[in-house]
Length: 203
Ligand code: MN
Image (cartoon, rainbow, N blue to C red; front, side):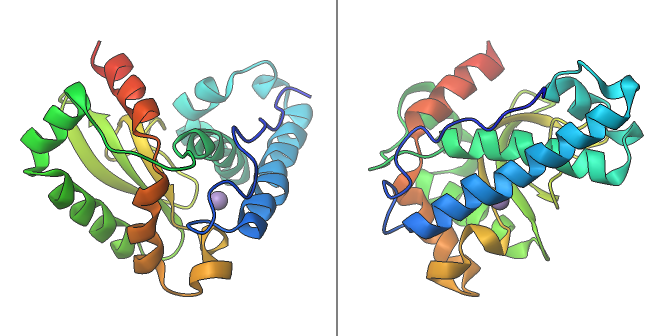
């Protein structure tokens, strides 16, 4: 099987109470595993897909059947998402902080706009902080399991942070209150990892 489920970088209960342990276990062990099982099944049935990296699949997303596209995106997005968080969170510093302040005015203004973009996504999808085509920071949202690495992304770029807007990401604790989940999520953002991604993206 070409794709396998990455282990969570922390215990399933480590992000509580921001994200409860049951949500983390279901999200990782069931939802993410299902995307992997389905992309592996699709690859097994189509020799043209065999041996391609997940990034290569995303780079040709416009030519993939919808289920293959969705499951490839689902695998990449969730692998990224687990690493975007850590127990205890923190705050951005250095070059990423300077870029956020320059682009959005302040960290709080950035968070507000990111949250607004997340609330504004109708249905399921993701909200991202990316380094866009111009080289600057942008907040973008994608539907379903799309992401800014797909060749037909309307707002392409390199993801620095991403939050999952699917109800399975927050429903057990926050029920229908997506805005509350988005606000709370900042407590567990791994800004050190985000800073690494930013440094790689602008290098
Ligand atoms: Mn999810």
